[in-house]
Amino acid sequence: MTLASCSTETTTGYPISVDTATGVTGAPSKSTAPQTSIKPCTLLSAADIARLGITGVARPEESKGTISCTWRVEPGTASDGYNIDVTFYKELGLKDLVTSQAKTISRLGKHDTINVLGDEGSGRVVAIGISPTSRVDVFVAGGEQTKLCKPAQDTADVIEPKLP
Image 1 (spheres, helix red, strand yellow):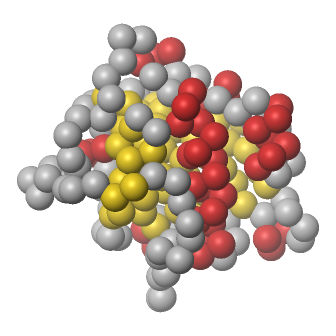
Image 2: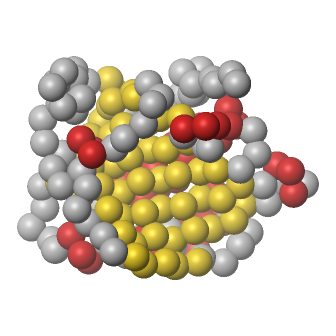
């Protein structure tokens, strides 16, 4: 299996130094807002949905420790389609992101992020640190993995300013 990174894509943010013990530099921004107030299905407005090319309706899901919302994008043919999943991890921070892939650590707006290819060719993840013990992941899956970098980053760019 060959995996490619998003290194040829232009993304918002800038590289930061990494703490070799944790893999993350500093603590992501802290907020006085309750972390349970993050509702992924409300992070994209109608204008955001149109701009991202989302064609399907939001599908919310909640399980122990997570709240998520998934949208479908069908840019032309079904084989080009992909899902955008935004998940709030209430009790897992950036340091808890487990992957066998190389991580690109950077900063987006006021948050530390980790950008990584999904394991087993499963897509692209942009993890956004909310606090040392919580994060929001943008996971884009489906279609050709190398084509998922831009929609993952575009979605992260849209939701980051709305996060505490």
